[in-house]
Length: 359
Image (tube, rainbow, N blue to C red; front, side, top):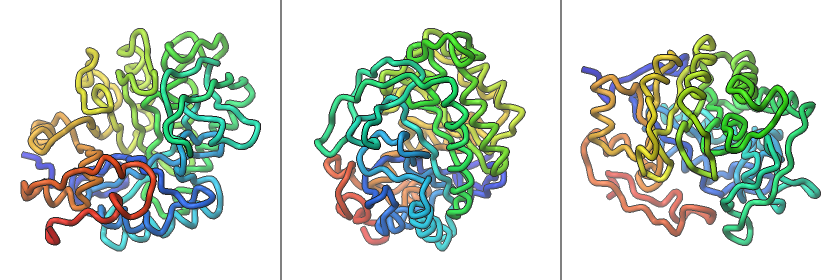
């Protein structure tokens, strides 16, 4: 019987165990959206995970939607990430970067002067984002022009190349949670009438083009994708998600991705917010299967032992438990999360949570 603590290969990435650290936005990047030296320590502490998926990292200046999130489009950012990947690898860990374009989930104060958020359609999201003033309503977006879309695909390709140069073991493309690629997928956010809107095939076009570009650049065995078929996060909605995501999975299958990272239900630990057949998705995608959303130790053990999942991603428990994989293995108690230090700040609530031996 397979265990949560057995090794596994996700494509070309060899994991020592099946416990994955999910991407977690912490809003602590330094000037120039460069990962700070503190980030290297933060990720190093968590290198006991079979795989770390880094915090969401924007592929371009217009891709930023929250205060002090890192990028991977400038030379300085790539150099900053090298310190992070080196720290993780020195402890025997594996790390991929999550490539992010937020689309309409942004605020003008976070973007280059004169710019507004971009989206498939000029529909404002009913949600907030984190700015220098705290949480504010997102700014109204403009619709991307057809001729702008090839440049966005190219930004993903270049970001993937930068990721490998920075020492990452691969990338996870963020196609979930109501951000740009997800905005194109769903008919509640995409009202285009050109080749990227209307039918399921058209709405999936940008995502598939991005995945083809990234896999061509760095190899399928180092490329994963995150999807969230029924999450309402960031005002995301679709009238009929099952055939939409079944189609996406079928189009992805020939790429032979390293993994598909699927959020089951919403993203706040509330599971099964809408009916959805995840097994149908898995059968079509034919990729190693990473599950996520509110898993505790027993649920994760059962998911892997039953074969329902290949690996399990944990989010917030990794914030307060740098050695979460060890704690899960030993069935040890978990540290309590400090909600007040989740976003922004320095070492407090970031690198000062005690490991099991210290505790």
